[in-house]
Image (cartoon, rainbow, N blue to C red; front, top):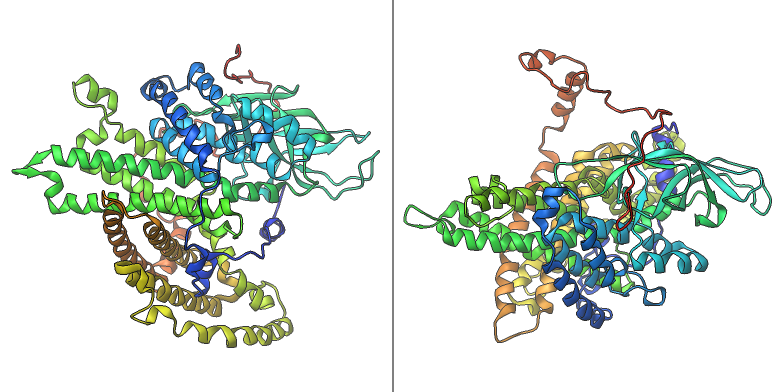
Length: 640
């Protein structure tokens, strides 16, 4: 599908969900912090289910050899069978449909454990349950679809979600896979191909996004304007071929491929929702599905903290443990404090999602964005602390007779999280769009490219009425009163910082809107810093909420947690100030000009003197051919 920027923007706007429920994170960007939206934290939902399941999962994980998965680049059938036996493929599926009915909180805690043992296994379970068939069918399927597919998924019929194509990433308006309603109106015919289909190589069930062509009324099917539509498809349907099993720098056991559709017959009953609602279904699914990544990042942080602590005490240089040297101590403090924050961000987001009373779109997106970036930094710092051993594989260490610590694998496996389910750059734009929604509504045609002067004049009058009421509220607040939030003890000063900084952030956002108006969306660096400040404020708020909710215990866990919380908040506040500095004092203009010159070939002389081994190996973006290739689909537990 050929699409210009305006068409892509329109499709994205039409697919946005509209909520009237309150959002804590949105308030952060509007200078209207309401801590009552996250404090006290909502209680756990059906905690007894998680308490019953997690020990079973841990017993299975104890029998799994992650080195075998890394070496063979495939998860053995017997591991999948064990997970099926305890119901791990139905963790989020309601009990009435054969699942375990776990809350998002306990589902995330399960992924946390799985991801530490084997991230590829965590990716398989997450792709199946967070974005595969179970989640969209549970939320948007008919009762017949739920009864047909959810019990199968709960029993271990692995599913996959297929959206991305060779030339389609985060711009679905360019979707090339098409679905045509048959002449008798009983089925659709799908043609096209999908790239990076996580679980696609082993899946039994697929959710496929395709562009339906507009059509007249046929049989019982009314006339439709078409649009991006979701379909549930049996993976062994005639005409489906898995053409390639992709290989990556990390997640070596992941089953990710290229899937081709040639005149694939899909019954109308397998359409998920209405024609044209596919992108809205996908985005809604991702809202809570994204929380699987923060959960696994939190697990990685906890493991990294353990390794960093033990190694930094055992390794001695210049007469004392390396952890007592200032340069390493700073890294240890960052790893420990950030790991505590990772768990807090996940837990707060999951509890809010489980409660179901708040709009958590921004919270979930911030959790994914922030956690994926922080976890990669933690892994990189851990590798630096380990030195040469951090760069060495676990197998090599074991061969030399040392403890096998897979730090280099951790870094490789975590890196994809900054791309999975929306890259950092796309998440910045997505969150920014939600964060400035109130401004866009107030500005009206002022923020619309192509608006006439008359339209802008009318919009300016309307916007003025909003800003006359809103701007004065940003001048003062609880964060300016030294006694505010005193019930939080030493953490009160950081709550005051969050409140003050939220108002400051809102003022800066308004300044950007006033300066660029309709061109605001092009200021991606500015918006990135705006979003990152909000992410740090959200993380600080989550850390304080989690710490406050911890019960007092003889072991003093709340006191030690408070130490971590204080350290994290100090570190996060410093990062906020750095982002504020870069909002207006940056090299964006000169960088843009240099990039344009680079693309124009001005600096090709810089590339002389090296040989590019990739030259001649293929085109940058492959065009699909009609060549019929071998089907490499390989379902678990079945003959290939």
